[in-house]
Length: 210
Image (spheres, rainbow, N blue to C red):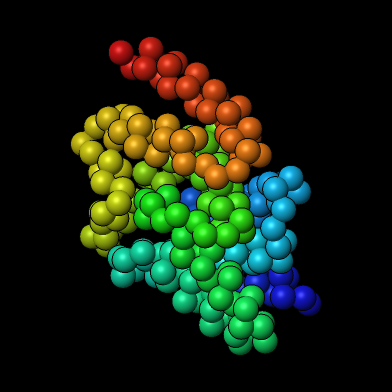
């Protein structure tokens, strides 16, 4: 089993039963999108695939302790890669990509691989799958607050008394701003189509709830 397969197996075990939308299906969509973007934009494919597979592995720790899953993920990724004999240069590159991936942190990517990971992760918040993920995530966060008292400070719109208001606020703060914060031409092209889907959905939702 090569390093990528071992990483996939490792992350699958950790994220089994993950209640939010940072689950294994998200991980593998981000990996696939990274590969599509890399085919046009270049970059080290091994770094990209490992970064994509490991970028959210710390989300379970964030649910339990609060804090920032990008930081947790980078730490877990470093330990995993070192334990599996990865070269120091590869370890450093992958963990730096993971540290900068998160939209809400607003960190500027420093390498093409980090740019592509940012883009692929953000694209997964767009289109039909983006709408699905946002609604599932809001439900999961509300449930976590009720059952464990855990509140995610970067997602306060999930806890509004009227969930429609929270959803509209989320859309304005994240998906509708994503296109302005993509790095690569390939990602922008993918995002343009997905953004149209979201705009149409929002228009119809407002009509039906007005």
